[in-house]
Image 1: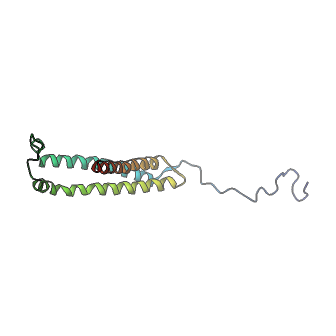
Image 2 (image 1 turned 30 degrees about the vertical axis):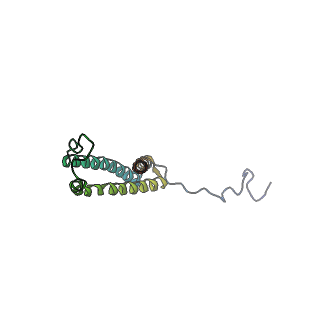
Image 3 (image 1 turned 60 degrees about the vertical axis):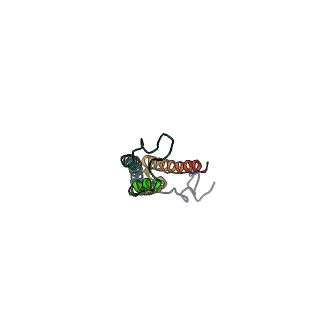
Length: 151
């Protein structure tokens, strides 16, 4: 055996590589970024639904769909009249891209919240999933619209 070390010390250099100090193992806190991501996902989903219902109600109040088309399938008003009636409502359609921006911000916050160590992951996971599903849903609707127009 080696005379420089104690007799019962089996590995003399085991203190050369000490593990990294772990933070206090108290209860972990919820991630603030994760909570923000989750709240943004809920706000944006409610906003998508609210804007959609609002636009549908405004359009249905502006145009009487029961008299829009006659029995032969022809429009009862000209396209110019229809555009003039719907043009003031186009401002409400600006809300969709703004809500989509909220989803993208929420998705980024959720991913950053997932990457941070030492925090609970429930809210970042929920925020990332909800924001991701909302963005995916919007793009799927766009793909469906493009495919429908190409047929």
